[in-house]
Image (cartoon, rainbow, N blue to C red; front, side, top):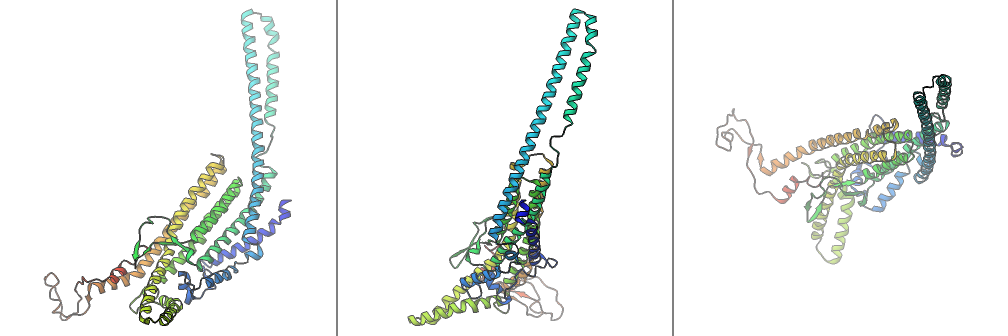
Length: 496
């Protein structure tokens, strides 16, 4: 009646279709995740991810975020609002919890009846044993052979009848291993797990969209590792940053899984644990990997925020045109009205631009830190789930051990995050290495010109074999390194 009244079957079928669309959007098409940044302008994607929002207005970012959240793969239309679905699952979980509590109470009562039956049977056998010993002792004391002959046929016959009655009573099954109530609970648990999976994907989708249109509240200091390590740029302290994307996704996964654990139904809890492992290990991993690739493109020398051989990249120019340009014009106008020189305002705004560009680099690096944060938080989540199993499920039971094995699948998810982080860092290093070599060559004064006369000896005065007028590189160390060169050499400090 509950399933029919709530129309669970139709609701779950719609939820499964929506969940499939969400997966295809972020981890579908062979793992490409083409819809991850859907609705975003590629020219302004660097500004958006850095939190500058193209126009630099926080209200514009909020409006764009709300507009993007309307494209939720049909979740609101087909299933409902997130809060309504969450409330329905709370009620659903409560029904299953009461059902499981009643099931456990009945089975506990049956176990007590079986114990009492066994105790009564043991007491009867003990009384018969004592009676037999008393009769044998009486026979030995009196030596009455005739009375023993008369009593011998009756005692075994009575004992045999009582034992047969006890055996027949033991064969009566009070409660079968699987009842109709178990079948209904399993069916409801299957529907519940499907809807919980859809809600988890919808909550993570909301976190993904929020991360695509961030503001200042999106970025926080890294909560793992050595958070005391920091550097200073222009007198302002900079620390490694992370986004709130991982925290929101892991919170949603923890809430949905623990709610399934609270039902007490091992089948439902195992299904929820498998959903958690699957969604974190596929969807979240794919999104974080793609965002790390985007972070690499944001700091690519000559194309991103860092300057290359041709100067600043397109991301920095786009930012300067959209945000700093407006600020520059505003500062210049204010300075002109105040009677100050425009050049002073320009230099002050250039320093502000430099600081915000460094902030953009830190925010781009937050995408790499998210992978490490996800690995650490998933490890903590696994430990939390195992503690909940120990506290709420019977130890040593087969179903409990099966649930424990499902939760231990998060260990493989942790390893996937670690491997993805390593690959992303290798990609970042290979991207920055050519520019780093150029910076080093410029700092030490390497010159590619020269003739055979210059190559006659090395810097220690030792002869060098040369052929003809082959050009070689001569190195002249430059010890007059300015602050800008040192700062560029230490660009990664405090970011990763």
